[in-house]
Image (tube, rainbow over the protein chains, first blue to last red):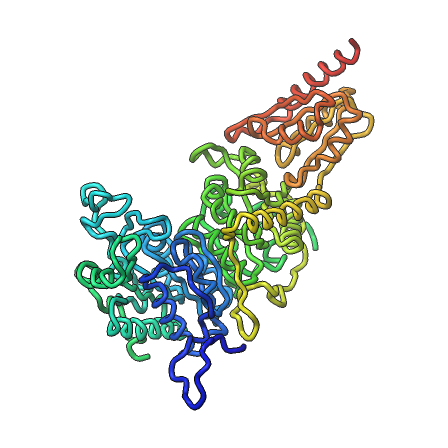
Length: 262
Length: 357
């Protein structure tokens, strides 16, 4: 496979940082300030580090990351809304030696696809899920998500999310950690460099858990959506830290012993 | 191989295994559950893939995934379950994947009941999911045909990279009769070139049903329509008996077609010039042959276990050349041969009276 990097180091200089081999050299369609690009890069770096690009199959969701498969230099497919864990199950069961990753947003995973994610985790399906939680429906233009915070204004909660009407936001990592089939369930955030590095480490561990056949693994990533939140990109990252992290505490919700010793 | 007493659902399951079925994903629903139960043992014994999903929605999406991975894969359900699978069927149609779906139809609408019905003719032939597509639909009328059509379903699915629906009413699934199973075929040796197997050192394979540009979506649609045109030209299947020199043609499929044969034979003993055409493919519908027969019969009677759905296809094939009448029972009621005989007699009397006048 030829290198996908577009960076040619100047003469006499050494290349120390480049595009991961698992990423395709194209512009993404994501909005400025959106953290999908960061999440994509972290997943691609993790795939490169583990040397599994050639056997990885990515299942893209319905949502802003509907075209995720087009940005990865791996085999990929596009699931129906919420059904990525079921589709990934079908793929993984046919060839368990493949590395199967679902990339899902909060509407996809925590609303319409709740049954599929819960049962994939309950079965201990050896797949890895990246769960992008940005507390809003991005692709349809900013409606309330199951993870939208109380009081948060969206196009379908214009006066702010009201618990009496819409109930309380759902914490999926906590839910999935209760299931015996889950091996590694953690929540990280993409709002600053330190947290991005921790997120990367978690993604590597999650993939390792899968490769070693230890069960279901998921990394939830608190993410920003400046466009639909209606705030500037830098303020959006602050908003993640100030509003999302308190309701969605960062940390390890389930790490089975076998994963700890990886 | 010798004939043995086989229950329809079990026979379909074993026929699928012998056709080289590699993976099955399903959900229990009467009257197809024996099929799932049978495979839960048989496939596991053979070290193949069996999984009971959390819903029909999940089952069909597991099938979607397994088909993407290049496996010979199947699911089965009954009417309400097929309704739930329609989302996945549409995505599978939008991704050009070969899968086999068994629908052991029961009485509806709603939760309905668990009795044999053909009330889902429109669902399987017309509205298997959103968007412009039709599955190939095979309609067996005996356990033997259920076996043969299961084998055929996989052949057609792979030949055309298209979904094939085996649509049998609950009677076919539940009854036992002597039938012969085919020899075991080997599993698929090599994954298709388009399958998701990991990119290795080739460019990535992508399977998706999204085409945001209207012209691209239209081109995909044209490709499906062209394929369906070939399917319509090559795959119309039917069985006919006593169709020479007749005044009245009876058309019925599945269990209704089988009971209609008894009634037709009784009518012929009474001297009525009547014959039977039994569609074996509901899509593509055998309209060429029905159109030919309409040239020389005086009228057509359609018999179904529904309110008259295939009736529309027969009318389209007949094209107004002769009158088309209908007899049907609904909601899980299976017609008795006498009822169909009476409908034949009525249609026949009208026809001959009209002719005499």
